[in-house]
Every structure is written in structure tokens, then in C-alpha cells.
Image (tube, rainbow, N blue to C red; front, side):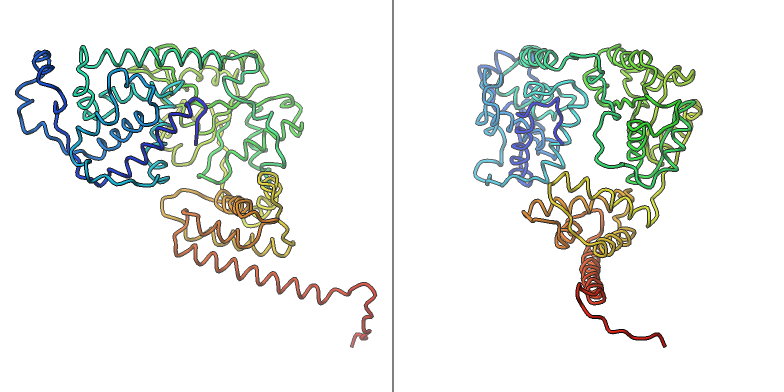
Length: 507
């Protein structure tokens, strides 16, 4: 998923890197250190070259997986962004490739691999984007130049093309200067221009809800509202059971004044911990951001903080040996009740992060959310149909009998055949299938969603074992055929207008 603080060219580089990685991943590539340095340069810089190491056979290295990933990223940077500062120092594609033995004559073009992009390079960009406020091609180059991040092979390749003063400082400083110019421009364009707190988070109570987002969760919502009257609450449950939906249900009720008088007028401000941490590399910067949020909440006493995945507050913002993480900063305000807070997390993460933290657990009441029963799931699916119709612009024209047969089959079949350790539960599982069926209908340019779209959605869902997906498709077809027969019986039994019905006296 693309992030707003990442330049589009960085994703272009990541996609090109996936293409190059697919080309070289299975080649037996080797690299010889100092192979590209002329004898004149070796003499000139003999003070910083290790001659013993230079003449050693250990200078020849076989490229491993990490080497090939970083090499692909470096090559892609040179291919996609030809105006980069690399070109000022004659760092180009040919100069890099000629140093790698095994590419010449063996390299064959490979098509772009979406799987490699999704598994390797997109997560890498996402990780960097969480650590930095802004990501452009210059920052990507700085990461490649940093031996703490990239493979040492990259440093050696660049050393062979250009011998830097103090081992790379010249080139690093040039990229850093260019990055700072872009960072300042980005900061000015995205600086806070109003007092609504948008740069600190967003108000969940301003969201346009097409329908009630928490059908069948009245008990959980009521329990959470009771806790919020006097303090804070954590909505706890396995992945996919609808924890976030419960919080959205609270926001929906606050929007429509369907809450006790003491809670009317309250708003929910959702904050993203990763966004708070991103780019706060200097001591005190993270604390400053958190204090801005605290000030905003205290200035408007009818604001409730919401963190989706509250386990992320543990250790968030800590630099070096510091101990002042997000939860430590918020703790005094939670203790005296001046800040109300909602958090969500899974049972596993709650035990992992908070089982031994008595102070934290005292600050929050617990509302547990379990997988809904069959009837509640049917309500949730039927209520979600309108939202999906609005999302993709394709209607579901199933009759009541067809809906009941298809949806009940999906519910029963999603209870079995789940991939081990996937940790996803209903209603998320069944809703993801229904949503994907709508997506396939739109993709296939249908006028309405068909049973074929539901079968395609099941076939492409990797959360179930392959053998079970085949069974699910068969069950869906049988359910559809059964619904057609029942519809036919109803049509046969229902008299048409003007039809003469034979009178048969009760015996």
C-alpha cells in the first residue's frame, strides 16, 4: 500500500528493482573488491587501501541474497532516476555491472514480478517510510550508502568507481543536501494550516458511515460506553472479529446522539503511532508531537483518543537508551482521567506486551469481542451489502432465498479449512469474500454480482487451504441450485392474478 510521504519515483525504483532481482536471483554472481580501481588511483590512495587484503583471494565474494537485493535496488536507482547525483561521479549502470562476474552473457530479460515486489521491495520502502518523515530517491541513495543498512558489496562497488574522501562522506553529503531541500519543500507543503488537528490524526466521528458499522454488537458497544463515562477502555479480541467495527459503532452512535447525555458532544480523534514516530529521529521531537496531541485533547475536553493496535504505544518514540515511550507520557493523564482513550489489540498482543504491566492494565477496562454467532453474522453480511454496492457500483440482485442460501454456506464453510497460524476470524473472513465477489463483478463488467463472482473470490483466497477452496466452490454451486429450486416451488405455489383456484374442502 502506497504511503503519502513517499515520492512516486521511489515506488518506480522498487518495481524496477523487483524486475532486476528476478533476473539475477539464480545467477552465480561474484564480485572482486577493488577490481575497478585503476593502478594510478591505487597508488594515489594507497594510504587508505589495505594492500594485504587487496592481493588476497578473500577479495572475491559470492553474492548472497542480501547482496542481490541491494544490488537490484542500486541498479534500479540508476535506471529509473538518471538525473541523480550518482551521475555526477560517473556512477552509472555500465560501471556497476562490469564489476559483477556472472552477469555478462548469462543475463536474460525477465518480466516484472508482482510477487517479488510485494514480498521484498514494497515492505522495504514501507519500513523506511515509517522511520522517516519523507522519502525520495535521494534518501534511498543515502540508505544504500549507509553500511548499517546496505550490503558491504554496495560500498565496495561504489569505492571502485570513485574513491571518496573519508570513505564516502563526499557523496553522502551531496545526497543529504539534496534530500534536505526536498524535505523542507515537503514540510512546507504539508504543514498544519488549520486548528482542526488533521496533521495529528483524524476524527473518526467525522467519517461518513453508509450504514451502522457495528451491526449485532450492541452489548460490546454499551459496555465500552459505560467504561468511557469514567475512564478508558481496550477492545480486545482475535484478528478479524470486528474490534475496529465496535469503535466505529461508538463513533456512529456519538454522531447520531445515540448515547447517554453525559457522552453527547464527544468526538473520537484517531492517531497513528507510526506517523507520530516517523521522522522524529532527534531527541525531544517525538515528545513535542505527543504534547501537541495532549494539549489539543485537554483544550477540548470532549475528545477521546483512539489507537488502533494499542500495543504499538509500548516503546514508541524511545531513542537509544531512553525510556520515555508514548504510554509513559500519556500515563499521568490516563491516571487522573483528564484524557479518555480507546485502544484495540488482539488477545495474543495483549498478553505479549501488557501481561506483566500492572500499571497499564489498571488504566483500562477490557471489553472482549468474540466471533459472532450465525445469526449475527447473517445480519452483518446483509448490512454490509449496501456499502459494497456503493463502493464498486455493482448491485447484488439476489432474492432473499438466494442470499440466505449463499451467505449461510459461506459462513459455515469459513469455519473450517483455515490456513494454520493465519489468526484471522469471522466476520473478517466471510466479509472479505463477499467484498471480493463484488470486486470480481466490477472487474468482469457485470451488471450485477453473480454466483460465479463468489466462486472466483473463494478460489483466490489464500486464507483457506486449496483443497478446502474446491469444496467451498462446490457447496456454493449446490446452494445456488437449491435456491433456484426453492424459488421455482414458490412461483408454482403462488397463484397468478386472475388464476382460478380449485376449491378443495378440508377432510
